[in-house]
Image (cartoon, rainbow, N blue to C red; front, side):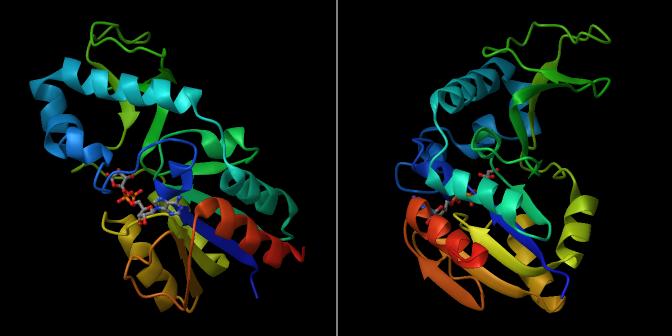
Length: 229
Ligand code: APR
């Protein structure tokens, strides 16, 4: 037994903190089509529109509070006697604000800005402006540090190593349709790792066990089971 636990989370983890998921009927992609706001092409075409979308999300995320699911995962990371890898597709910082020590943000983070020219990263202001220059090289084309559709997610080597160090893979609040994250459960199975899904409604992916319910309920219950109460 290696003992590690690999947790992959998605928008459902933060839904009860008041942050919209993407693919629900009233989800974010309904009012803001992906191709308008979440691709490099969209940013090249209309950077102001893209910045407005992420400024809106940054403000909402800053006002949101961690919910019991975030706090339970932080507790698991602090108290489990082997590594707990918190890999998230979420760009909010609610896991960190819920007490998590280390979070792997594979799709970037709203709190960071990125210079597309020199690669420098810095703390984004609450309202980013396309005209704000990069503090290092002076280029004006600064962007939110978000992995858009068509771009390569961050930390893939770390994620592979984390999977190899785990005995349990748990998917929480993700529809499992966006790759490469959608392929992690299959990778886990091929490594002989037990797989679980905790979701409001089962995604339809292949897991050894599926528990349906609100993240704020099923996640703390599962963490209590792992930690023995
Ligand atoms: N508790 C648990 N699960 C929930 C809750 C809740 N309160 N509310 C919704 N869910 C589940 C839904 O059942 C769904 O499976 O959360 C999932 C949300 O799915 P998506 O909206 O597709 O979000 P996600 O899987 O995180 O999307 C992946 O796609 O748009 C891109 O880059 C974006 O990181 C995002 C990626």
